[in-house]
Amino acid sequence: IDATNTKCCPASCGSCGGSGCHLRPGGDTKCCTGNVSSSCSSSKLPCSLDGPAPPHYPPPLPPISKCPVGAIPDSSGMKCCPAMCGVCGGYGCDSRPGGAMMCCTGRVNLPCSTNKPPCVALGDEPTKPPTKPDSKCPIGTIIDSSGSVCCPASCGACGGYGCDNRPGGDIACCTGRVIISCSMGKYPCRLNGAMTPLPTTPEPTPTPTPSTPTPTPST
Image (cartoon, rainbow, N blue to C red; front, side):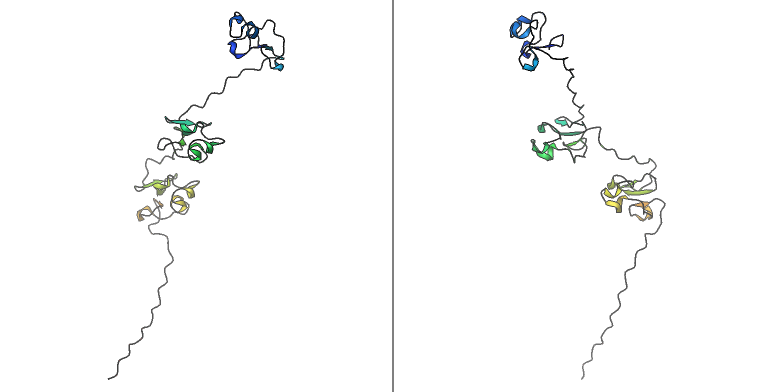
């Protein structure tokens, strides 16, 4: 478009109208605008716009990548795929080089700090809730948010929402019914819990079978 935003020239001109337009590729016929009267609706260049030129918007900036070297970000900038995918996530990700396993991000939840792409971008990894510095839980266990119950460290977090979905399930990672003391050496446990384990139903005592006397042989 020219400086007045009313005339259009072929892109081969480099610029539209103005001083020296006749010296550009295409000459005055293509690159000068003084005698242009045909409407751009006719699709012939150069031409005159029927109305004000549409506003020019710069292309959107790509998301700032936090991905490791050799990986590309998805549209959110939060997940990374191998560069061979060309595009990370989105429609058609399963048909790209590497397939769904490498180029789709719907189930990606492992951090890039410890895993190869596809992975969650550096700085966006979920963080584990901090444990209290004065935790008295046994080695190999973690304390809950109340500071009174300990779960196996494999749970990742002790108690709280979603505890039943963690490694070990509700038996190991949920704290609502925990009463046994940690001194018993069984986890999960309560720091100031009961010193005896939960009562269990005693197994029935088997009824003794009466013995049959062995007959004495006659002489």
